[in-house]
Length: 124
Image (cartoon, rainbow, N blue to C red; front, side, top):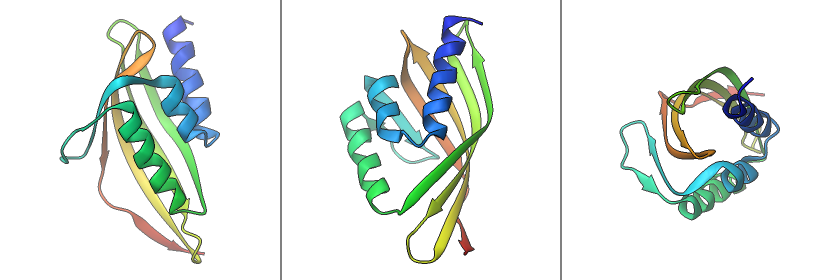
C-alpha cells in the first residue's frame, strides 16, 4: 500500500471517529479551497475550521460513515460518498447523503467539493 493511500486511510478513520476539527488541523492545507454544491468557494483552513466549530455547536452529535473512498496515487485525487447522521438534540435526527471530490498535494487537501441534495429529517 502506498504512503498516499495510508494517509487517505488515516483521514477516513479520523472522520469516522468524529474527529472533525482534528481532521481539519491535520489534513487541510492553509490555503484550502472548498465548495458546497454550486455555492461560492470558501477559502482558508481557519475559515473552514471556524465554520465547522459553529456547525458542530448546533448539534448534539454527528456520526459519519464513509461508504465509498477511491484514491488515485498518481494524481492525488480522492473521491467518495458519505452517510452523515446528525442528532439535533430536539428529538429529531437529520440524515445527509453526500459525495465529495478532493485534490491532495504534499499530504494535504488543497481543494474539496461536496455534492448533496437535501437534508432528510428522521423522527426518533
